[in-house]
Length: 309
Image (tube, rainbow, N blue to C red; front, side, top):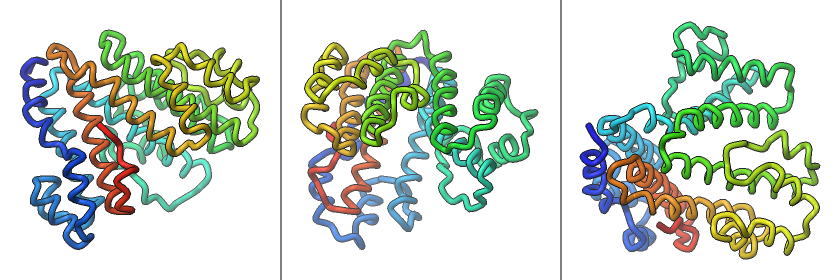
């Protein structure tokens, strides 16, 4: 299948994504009727009993669709590698810290629970592809002798993003998506570091390479006050990082939501390119935002907290 055909399918179903007007109607529905209403709208599957089950079924449907129509499944699989990263971290922490309880497995990834058990707990890489085997060898080497959950997570993130960037250099849409994601993640890590009074070296240990903003910019940022910090980030993303900092300051929850919306806005410009993966990335992001908004409405009925797209 080629990109024009695959993206034609995406465009044909994109309008089915729940929009702000539908969310406004869902706010007034009781929890008892909430799931039934979504099922009636074609969301998820009729046998779902809980909202989270319904959302997972819908996201799984999206993953299957993208896999079926993608001209390059290796690239669309990367969308779900962030879920694999979560699972990889938990399995390593389970092994290193002897934490046996494990009920937070994210099912919508590309690496199964059994495979992670075999690779991380049993240290058997024999059934992995060459690329995946290298990832786990690199992780094992990087976290050897580490006893900090924070540093273990950071090393895993750095290795996984290095793998991703090695696969996407020919796709402007994917490079833009992941470099933006890395930059916004690094800004949040920096602000958390400042809030917790960590020094520059502790931040650099967690810094994820691959974005537009180098670690040198963040090193400079450690000596800046609030106004100087806003000025420092103005050259990046048409001043939108600075605008977020000016509006939300150190309110990291609101700033994280702002960055989620900003990534969707950035990727919208690629959603009209019929000959590349951009429309598929944009659709994936809309489905993720849709799911997050459903969780928000169900939990709080707070329409003002919704992601806008």
